[in-house]
Amino acid sequence: MKHEPIPLDYCEDCNSHLNIPIHLQEVRQAIQKTRNSTPGADGISANWFKRLSNTDLNCITSFFQEVFTTSYIPEEWKHSIIVPIPKPNKDKTKINSYRPIALTSVFSKVFERILIQRITHNLLTEKKIPPSVNGFLPLRDNQLAVYKIHTAFSEAHSHKKYFIGISLDIKSAYDTVYIDGLIFKCLQLGITGNITKILHNFLQNRTLQVRWRNSLSLSGTKPVQKGLPQGSVVSPILFVCFLADFSETLDVGEEYSIFADDIFIFCAHTSLDHISKKLQNTMENVYKWCNYWKLNISPEKCSIADLSKKKLQSIPRITYAGFPLPWKQTIKYL
Picture 1 (cartoon, rainbow, N blue to C red):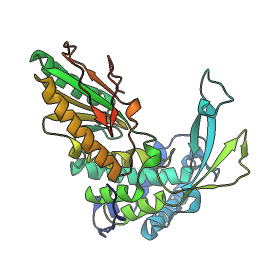
Picture 2: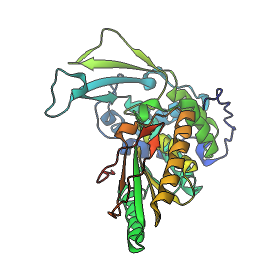
Picture 3: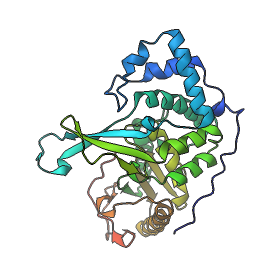
């Protein structure tokens, strides 16, 4: 299902917690949480920030407030240097034997942490994120995601039910996020005002450059028009926002658990046919949802399994976009 460009109304709301003036304590906390990682193109390190005097910090706070008020993002903050790192025990002559690491501006990371703190506080206090969506939020770790599945499985086992689960694989999850769609979802979650305009500007018209053997690529910078930037500290929480409405795809009686970009859908019932129909209907809904929000599922990398270990009379055929999902003995989740 295709759609016209989404109209975005930032709903100016300068009185909310999300849009109050930036204060010095926020900057201090953001600097303390910033790791001493390799700096981006501007060469400014986290240690440089941590050695600043009170006078300097006040200047930084004023600068951040100007960025917040004008919604103008410095070009250096939107530029990433990509460094290919070889994977262990892989053929270094092949491009897929390398893992790309993105170096971004530490100046930007400090500012982003201020945004993260405000967004996280808003999402939690307003209870905007469903309990089945975990990761990158306080008290929403991977153990909680696994516990939810284990509890449902134990209950199904005690009632001698089938327990069928599907693990979905999102292709290049961060790299394919539909930016206007993300901003629309942020607005729907109550993330409004100048902070949303800043996020939109931060994600648009980004550039990257590859560094190989300590030299930048001769081809220069490349424009990036979609996706969440790798290496950006605000990307994970924005991806949580992007998946927050995934529950709309589920049929009645199904449950799900999300951690980061790992999605697990499961259903328990005494009738295998009942489960099959439910899951097939959901796969069709997921396909429509992904098509609308411009995400891609790799069905060949997905898996489906009967975790109850009951003897199946027949193997149900569950498809995604016409592609049969592969049945496995076990499913690896997280």
